[in-house]
Image (tube, rainbow, N blue to C red; front, side, top):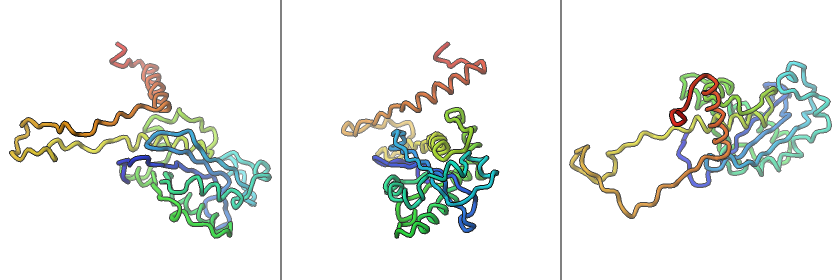
Length: 241
């Protein structure tokens, strides 16, 4: 995964809830949740839809996401929300945890709608944070594990695993996962061919000014909550001593 962000990079953090695990067995999407991020900043824009799957769910499935058959009975069919959903994600990079699962269901729904809808790969690119976690930790990790590891679990109430709720949590996880910067090579491109690491290197006075990236409101809140946890455990930040 490339973590170097380009200008106005638009990401859509996405999650779905379904009636089961295999669309080939007739399982359908019952909820879609998306949050928008531009240049690593949450914009506040979201897309959220409940969907009538025309499928009776078992209680075991209902216990996971809390959506009952009765609640979904008057909700629109996927084909009725497909175009507005596509418009929201069009041209963005989707960030999904276990993308194979969600994209498989999305493509199944696009085909089932019989509206000549494109497949996900024709609409946008996809980053799978499950694969990213495997690269980072040596084995794929669940969203719950990553949320605890990056200490963002408390930022979202997950009494139920709703699609929009999990998308919001994944957004916080993604910010932390991609926070690392590439190692600086101080000797590269400095114009000094002597090989002396201690030589004085002049900075070009015509260089562009460095971009100042201010913390977003979400990041400030996360920082304050992180400090509160530290203080609860008896720690005190150095700048408050």
